[in-house]
Image (cartoon, rainbow, N blue to C red; front, side, top):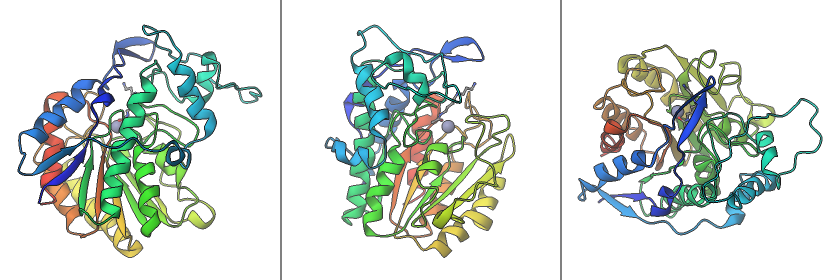
Length: 338
Ligand code: Q9C
Ligand code: ZN
């Protein structure tokens, strides 16, 4: 039995060159090298991983997760000149009345940061990234595999229904979870270093989707403003959203103890029919953006722990920016399930 891994080569068409961090222009961390690193490591074990090119996800499916306005911003960006990249530098005023998704200068209305550029390749790459997640979910939904991997890039967990940012355009994990929901309750565990604000928002009032995010302190880390423990869901969804803040340089011992004492018991009592793991490897000790201290072999331990729950699982790639180790980290995590 091999693990079906979904990836489309057009995900590589989008190449953000730089981003703005506190006024400085830096090389963009979300490079195509990331996906290539993971692909390389998957291909090194053909007896374990089968790489499959996804079908294109129907627009109607994407619209179940995202607003027409947000998608129209991406359509507008497709009309940019080949060499042009748009970085919003004006953000909404509290009383903004006339956002126009057809006007690229209004993109800032739909955007949460200055690190997430738009060009005429963004939509295509984001769509294929979402397609990988959707097909990974579909394979689990049909019972054809108990574990699938979506090599989603660009990542997704910072994108909400109507906003993009944090290198994310379409919420791949949410699209996967909505599909899996057709057969019962879904638990989404977000182990990226950053809080999964987009996913949280999408399912905030949903009592059929349990969302748990483990992340660095939002006082001092992206996406700021949210990811606090007081955010517990609302309406019917109250009690189905959990944020867990972990300390700087968090070790694997600490990480595992929180998984065992808190995350796994919550998942067990929720009793979902499937699980989506938003797997970011920016928790790695050398990551240029994340501030935890996990090591490559630690990801095997995490994978093994999740596998013990015996819940059909879609692993969806999120962040991870130390490209030299990213492929090995992802593969070690998946191997932990075997
Ligand atoms: N100097 C994901 O991991 N910029 N997104 C941080 C830090 C935003 C990360 C700048 C980081 C977003 C999917
Ligand atoms: Zn991240």
